[in-house]
Image (cartoon, rainbow, N blue to C red):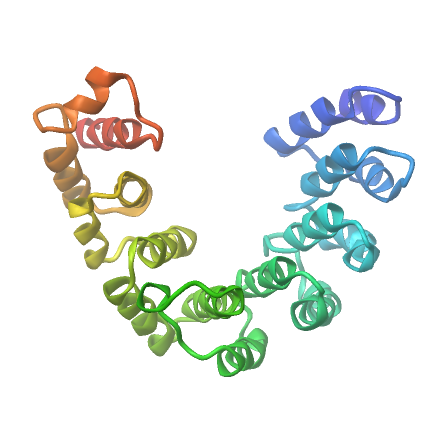
Length: 277
């Protein structure tokens, strides 16, 4: 920790020190990281790294970067929003202070992407007090299936805001939100299906209907299903993944070609290793 803090106090090597502190889950470097995050003389890259290193740290440190939620620089503002997503380290008092500011971002930020991230961050807390806000997001963003209409940017963001609010409510075991995610997966095209699979990855669960995507012809969708199954699937689901995509199948062509842009074969190998264990 002393070595990391010493490096952060120097003019160079900040990113490497912050990366080490984050990977090792070190403690004691936080005051130096806060100082870097707020230092306008530092590069955006260094400040982003400093903000990101605070993401799982105690709320008393994260609250010191709250002013960054209102700055003009979009990259730093986004890093600050994402910093408040992990619930570990945040006390009820921290959430009482941070929550209203994230809601303000979610409602008024000029960037739709930043508004989406703020909604998602609030939903990750599993805090029942966030339910009224998440339900308000649903009321303001009626259901939409992108596969059933031509592309429109406003419709797309309506879809995204509703999606992340549904994920937040699903964390609170809201049955209707979970049912809507399943319906969206069933009715939607590859984009919606992949978004719902990623939502399930975030929720830490692999529902039975996720296995349907092993029949997908879109490589990225198939690889996303494989990633979910490896991360949160049952032994039986992993067995089915290996059976469907393993060395004895047509997917061996990926291995023979040397092309596996979406890491499908890596996920299949991991599933096979899990079976062996």
